[in-house]
Image (cartoon, rainbow, N blue to C red):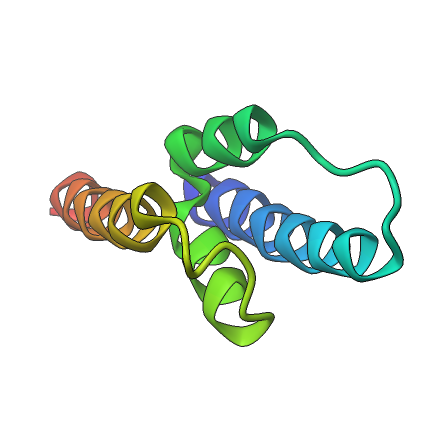
Amino acid sequence: MVSIILLLINLYGFILMGVDKNKAKKGQYRISERALWITAICFGAVGTTIGMNIFRHKTKHTSFRIGFPLLAVIEIVLFALYLK
């Protein structure tokens, strides 16, 4: 059950990055950086990191470029410890 929840949170984070990139291209109202960070912190960092790299979104922002992957590693380690 935990694996399914984590998968869904990460899928949501991935989609969120794609939607925000699309809105940025169109000059529309954007998803807040706070919402992106909250998603990443709530165990969605793997999805947001993958989305950031695939959509090339927020890659110039040092806090995202370093923070999302760092959170992703932490979350992967925590999940691996949970499975133990």
